[in-house]
Length: 472
Image 1: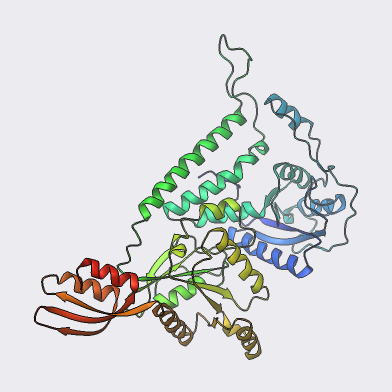
Image 2: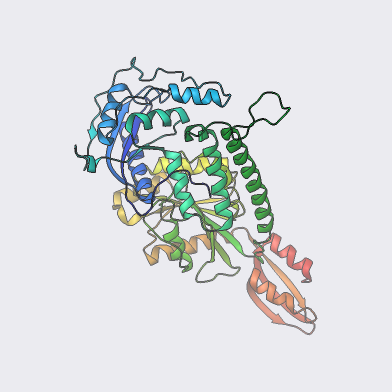
């Protein structure tokens, strides 16, 4: 897979986090977003040691920050604090037969004064050995902004999307997940190829060809990226087609765990199924969908799937590419929407997840809201949450009684869609008896002269399938 950023996982590079407080954002929202960005960086193996924030009307200027704040940032990285001359870059683009890029805003945006936001220096001091090697912005940056900021800071500059994409690269294990991540990575990289610094003509015009220059290195790189994306998308279609048969449930009902990343879905999955799924206190610990049988087993069987978590400002291409990974959620009989109830911003997390589910076309599935980590709440907080979300269930995934109660709630909810029916299976077709016991709850069973008569409960669609298979 093509690497987006060059970070050695064995070396914990020091990183400065940068946030821009737009007019519509509160101090608490900015602080929470930077806390989340810090956790993303730690998941990637970076060491956040300082934060720089500034109030701005927009993030559209060439260096995002004002001139004074840019100098403050450069002090933490050992940079010059100003954008170097871009004449060589412009000349290089002209050699590639491309029009020079012109920023709409002035380079150092002198018209907007710096706000007196605090620069937290953390462990950094004036010694070069303590300076940060990486700067991470809490929003997306354009190619020109990346180039300008790297020139001013002398450090590697990343944006929020690139950090998320790199985490996904490291944590994707299945062929399907790796394909999806590579598609999103290439789509992120394609417009940023200009910043690689390579240029010149890859091949010269041949004899008798007018115009002289052939295809440039940049043009070739872009074409190769487009071709690779097209190839991967075809491969993903084939993978999705092959996966259409994997949900031959034989009457099993499906429950999918969805929610914000690190809400405790994998811990809850382990408690409900006994599966040895990865449980880690880090963002995006789960990328590949895991499906296990509810334990103790119910009849008909209930399959529980653990899906990838969501996050604020998840890259659009990554959301789109993970449609197939969320196939289990789209086909589920019930969504367990898991929320970290102890998070002061859980309402925003809840809203973000529902918005992404809507974008993916999954929001039409029935939903049960699970307020997880309730052991961290006092009685007053629990009562307030129960009043605000009367149809929810508060649990701690670490409490066996809570998970047992959730299991019974799930089964009771699923059985609301079941009907009672009488079926007769002739002795000449004994195979159907096994199918019935796998796909329906058998309430009574009696052996008669010509066959077995059963009273069962199952979804109406399953009853029709059983009758079509030979039960009468």
